[in-house]
Length: 357
Image 1 (cartoon, rainbow, N blue to C red):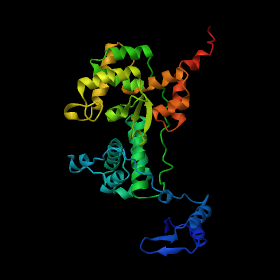
Image 2: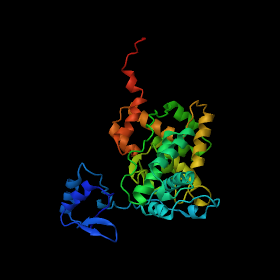
Image 3: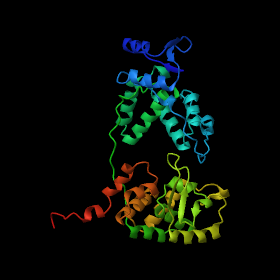
């Protein structure tokens, strides 16, 4: 059946009477009609322009990505908290698990939602409304948190009301901070080579070469397995990346030669880069490798793994690579995301004559 839940409204009640054989459910306290393709079309045409319809339940389930990381929420249940601290509801956590959100997203959502409910500790969860959300967001803004931080808080709160409780989009009027338009930090090819030359060993050298030469995110580098290096086709396979997407990207010949030396010396078993006891290398270690090498190379810019990825994309654009191809290599869902590199590529400005000159 198609259930129709709504606040008392004469217009909606009148429109429901015009639907094919509408009935009332005492158990669920809502009107309903038979769930057929024809009725679904009639429903949308009837209410078009009059109400907002939550159609998520009518969409077929997307296929599960077989490369998803294992969801681990034991940290949530085992952590120590003070007695008066309100914990995230179990059904919130369950929904995150069932939808197979990444572990990092689970932690982010839980953290922000608990910040919200503990800010309003004296009020029942279901009694919280748009005003309470605005007061909480105002509190975050007054504490000088970034726009990105505030937007993450909004997403975590919306997830509870709209996904966990299945309510319509209650908070579409909640004001979001204006999106910051920041240019990516890019360094020159010469600086990249200097960083590579200033790494401590062959393992660190390969890490920097792959971050730059394949345009990898730090998490993608850490998840690389030995089998993901395709030396025959000179490609790197990236599985289960941001948004649960797989892609292929470039493999540098220079990096491949060093990877062979690295493999002979370190003999990794599963992951391409492993820490102690064969576990995945840590993100903090990768960050330290990049920063230390950049400091040794006397690079004035603060260099992170993502700066190497930005530089990869920008240098490709400057050498004449098509924007669509760069989008595929980076794994961006839209060319709009990739277009940011046109704002920092030197060839954007080379054809413009400076008025001073």
